[in-house]
Image (cartoon, rainbow, N blue to C red; front, side):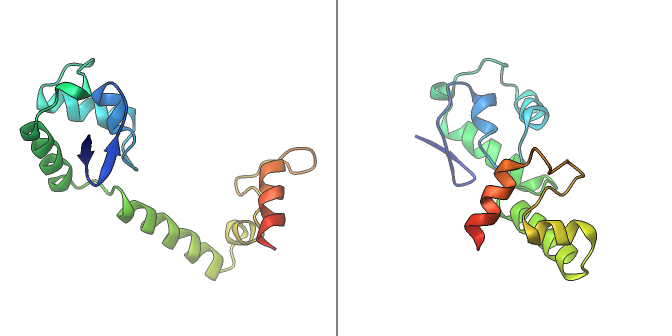
Amino acid sequence: MVYILRTHLKKKYLIQALKDVYGLGNFLCFRLCQSLGFQKNFLLKEITDEDIYHIDQLLENSRLIIKSDLQRAVKQKIDHLVSIKSYRGIRHRQGLPVRGQRTHTNARTCKNLRKLKR
């Protein structure tokens, strides 16, 4: 089993597995593997402890906000919008779409989640 930043990686390839870490997407995973010298189709089962250590060090030393720090930052931004009672904050609090989507015929998921909150 491979753990990077306290995340269990299950996929077959390293690039796909790194996407399981919250805050890492396609581009960052590709750049990370490229900087460490891994091929695009590097298998996760071939990774060594030393490689895991290098990946951890590179992610910790970078100025990226990932994992719980990123989740906390997003939560704080939403709480700030709710506290200042902006339009987006009100939509967040009501459990409706925030970015201007129509709600007359769509947004069923938001409406169903809203019912569960009550």
